[in-house]
Length: 212
Image (tube, rainbow, N blue to C red; front, side):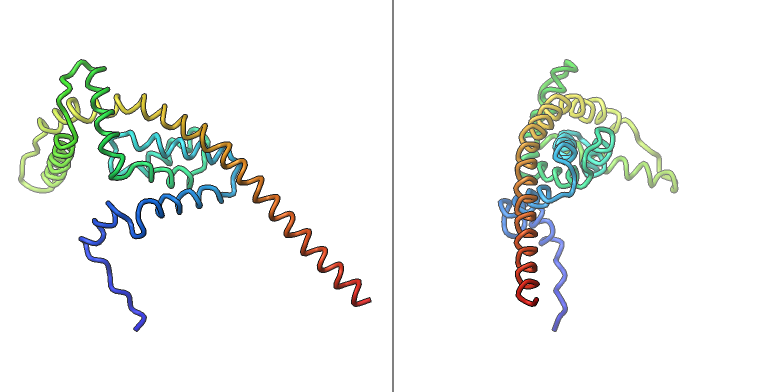
């Protein structure tokens, strides 16, 4: 009677695009966790900046790792960095991808003709080619690298280059906005804990006086 029915694959995919309780509730949970982290505000804000920045990189599936590495080098809070990757979600990724690859294509003087459907197809085909080439190492199949070469120079590299400026800018904005908010929240929380402690001590003192 206490067994829970496992989620189906379709349910998992659906909740990725729309979490249970909605995006507002999921965002509220992430913000709540970040505010209660036991670390100085500047370290938490650096972690948030690292997580936001990682969302502008083309390392799909590795944003946690990217955020962790960046947070390590800028001495940010690791958990805050992981939570901040929530910034990259199905609602924001289309805009992030369009901006990043458009800027990168312009910087590299490439045609600006890659849009979200083509980007998704290119990544899917690249993953397929990479998996095929890995299997070819252990079978009689022949590895083909021409497609991955085109993908790297036409999609991945422009995305990486183009994502640097908006990624750094967004990370700096996230740092600037989050640090004073977290600082104020921590001061208010410390004040409440101190008042609660003093009230408890006062009650104990009263009880001790009454017992004498």
